[in-house]
Amino acid sequence: MTCDSILTNIARNISLEPEEVRLFESHLGFRELRKKETLLQEGQLCKAISFVDQGALRAYCLDKHGRESTIMFAFPDWWVTDMYCFINRKPAMMFIEALEYSCVFQLTRDGLDELFTALPKFEKLFRILMQNAYTREQLRTIENLTLTAEERYDRFLEKYPKVAQQVPQKQIASYLGITPEFLSTIRKNKSRASRS
Amino acid sequence: MTCDSILTNIARNISLEPEEVRLFESHLGFRELRKKETLLQEGQLCKAISFVDQGALRAYCLDKHGRESTIMFAFPDWWVTDMYCFINRKPAMMFIEALEYSCVFQLTRDGLDELFTALPKFEKLFRILMQNAYTREQLRTIENLTLTAEERYDRFLEKYPKVAQQVPQKQIASYLGITPEFLSTIRKNKSRASRS
DNA sequence: CGTCTATTTGAATGTACTCAAAAGCGGTGG
DNA sequence: CCACCGCTTTTGAGTACATTCAAATAGACG
Image 1 (cartoon, chains in turn cyan, red, purple, orange):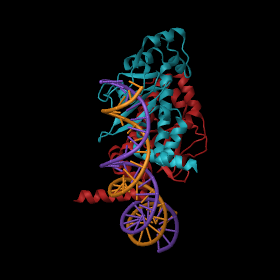
Image 2 (cartoon, chains in turn cyan, brown, yellow, green; image 1 turned 60 degrees about the horizontal axis):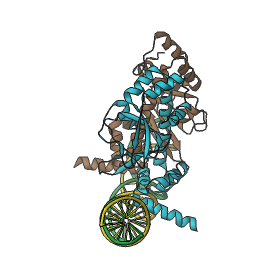
Image 3 (cartoon, protein in one colour; image 1 turned 135 degrees about the vertical axis):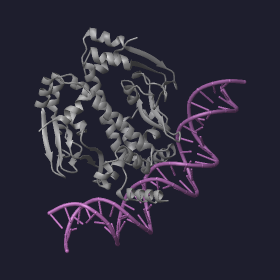
Image 4 (cartoon, each protein chain N blue to C red; image 1 turned 90 degrees about the vertical axis):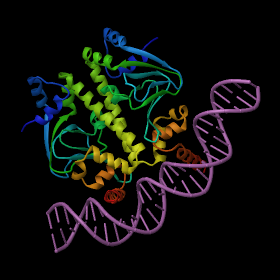
């Protein structure tokens, strides 16, 4: 097994000496997930952050009515965890589930702390990852506040053209904050409009 | 003039030696703003990140119809900037305006880079600030997707009880993603409900 | 005091949801 | 290999949540 994918990802932001790579790898876990297997469930302590090597995952939470809200999808080269609970060592508020056979590399909270101490450049790496995650999330907030459901769906298709094929529509609906029924009518309207 | 407020804020996450404090202070700018004066306008290069010492600010952007969306409010002890544009040295997508007389400390993008190099613990500080900003923003996304306008208003009042008194209702409405008219009817319903 | 902006109110409208039922589709076991 | 089961998607009717527009009222500030 090789960790090229995660090392390439890291190298986009910091560069590691060979012995630093070895230290990093010594903290790295690996996990395979069958379709529908969960990486994390609500209430569990969120011990690790995962980097997707292969496959596709989805993070979601349940509201008081038992309805799912999709927080994010994660594909190869993405990092995923319940960040708040991972950082603060709290029980998870979300589920992370494999949409298909997937493999992930994992860093535990303690492992990451050791890396932060031994190799301060990991602070920089995570500063940049957090920055990107923050600005992406802020953009999502603004789009949720200002765009209609149909416009949000269009943006989603632009940003993640492949996702639309890989995941069920009801999960896209829950990412956009609309019902599957309404997403269906949006799609009907679009196909009607494009035929004319 | 003293920088106690910002040093106290930083000390919650990293500790600085006296000479490190001096280096930090040497990069620090200061700005006073009269009510309605802007710290940043759309299209301008976003050169600095600001820490609120006194007063109250609001970050907002305009959508294609010219409507405002409030991205965040900022009060003493808060950091505020157009993060995406600050980090990537791009023209700003938002406005940041003083709601009342305010003072802020500022770090420029170049100054921050120098701090990152000279004092790597600033990477840690910003990693933590970005983490907090990300998880806060993610929570806001989930609340926007799952809660009704009235529930979002209730949460807002719980989280920021003082804000509701300091800022005009139409700005709260634009933070919640609803019209000022509808916020007004929500408030009417609540006061009717609480009287019974 | 007058002006300007914010807030309230109400009627008409639009966007998105709920519920129910039918149709489609994929996987699994006989 | 096909029939069946369960889940997803579609469709439609009725409803609820939130907006638009217009007008009246209230507050803030010079």
